[in-house]
Image (cartoon, rainbow, N blue to C red):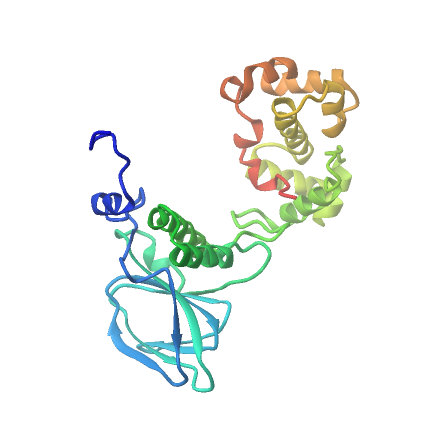
Length: 305
């Protein structure tokens, strides 16, 4: 085997790309992801941070200070230290403390000033705790390519940290009015069995806690269509994976999406997509027309559960 054909080692990859992910994030060598254990009363600093650092407490506690800002770090707290911060850590005086950490460099981004300083790790809709555990596993077990995998996981952790955890069911953070969010939660509950049954305007308005005219006005302002039409678009969109990823008959697909029969589904499907369900199935994901909920911004209303 020639040198050119020989697989490159991880160290060779590391020397070539500096452990960079596609957007320029770079892990700082020998500074995590790893676990640190400190005896009671240990301190660190003052120091001036040279790069970014995520710190999360696994056991014990710590007092972190930076100028006039102070934070009590407890298990379930994730701290992001920025370059240039002059900070100080005082670890628990009543017992040993264990924390996870990882240092990284990142090119300047326009929204870094708005990133939070701390976030809690917890909640069913929050993936950050799992990402932290995975980072520590990568740094400890060091499987093949662990540095590059860790860089990707770290970028995802940073993205979730900066933007906040996923919204809870029924909660929307993209400027969706509260009545619309309440209506979406109702739709999610009604469809929880797996069948996207049709819903009347009276039902939707009652769930939203507003009049039918108010709900229609809100929907047209934010989505460019009425609530009943929006719900039908979502029902049609639910047919897409059933057509592509199952052998279900059109009659069975129609039932799952709340249509009376295959003819009813076909008629409404062609009116919206411009092709019949059979033609849509034959075209596959690459050749099929776009999903209608993407155009009017209805993705925020699609049930996740």
